[in-house]
Length: 113
Length: 296
Image 1 (tube, rainbow over the protein chains, first blue to last red):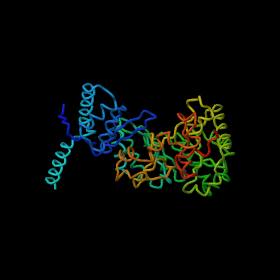
Image 2: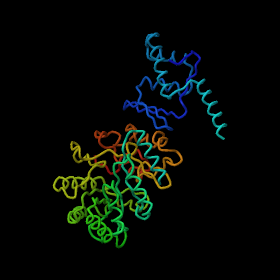
Image 3: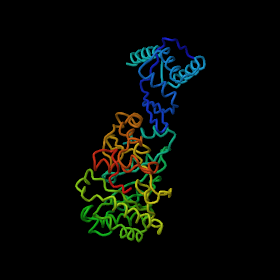
């Protein structure tokens, strides 16, 4: 599992967009660059909505436990697993990873000029 | 156009789907060489099952028919006909077009193609439908369908000729009855509003494909939700297909049935029919408005 510290800032990957039609139980994340689409459940969608504005892991955890009224140990484990899965699927990223990726991408651009 | 095709292939591969194309215009045979180049590419592509060509028939000659025989994924050629006589047809399609269309139908049938005829219905021709069907039966036409007039583009001047809901009801009931009585030509009724005639017949009626499984792409890359709904929602060459499909507000508005207004928004048959968004837009300026020709 990736390290998630309380102050780790999570954000949606730039090319990801969220869309839902709650009446139809439709919750999706779309990658508009690669075309990948991810069908989500309501809980995952809620988490992604919180993350979409950029959020610290500890803030997200607090909101998650309050909203879904789950015991702390169970809830924090579930959220950690979900966050890791979303990072692996490249739907979200840690701000630190984003900075690294941006640096790599800039270096790559310089080299290929 | 080749680049557009490649973008479509990439998207279909990503979605693990196979697609089909309707080549239409204007008149697709005006750019004959380019069209046949494109057909060759689609014939070779693993991502497409078949294509149809929608034509007015005026440019179909023997040379073209020979070339068309090589189109291995051609499912059918759809020819537009607006009346059973030159008087009714040529009023809408132009002088001499009835003779050209009939010549095209006969040429296509002689060469063994599957031929479909489509009639755009309005007050000017809807009472002629039985006669059109008699004519098509004589000619051995395979399938027949009607499209409701959408008063936009050239059709805008025909706004007064739009059928009333009761006239559409009368026509669709007649077509459904004729479909049961005769197998040739096969009458295609997979369009919005047909389900009102026989709600329990699963071969009758269909949801509009807008936002669901189809797009219209112009030669310059401009994308419309439907060829009858001329609202540009992006450019496939500049924006890519995924971006348009996933981000277009128009498509999302239409995908969500809760957005539909008026009688469409409270219809019991919403799972089978959501009306024609193009007719709603052309008549009211609002693509989410109720279908103005619905009689329910």
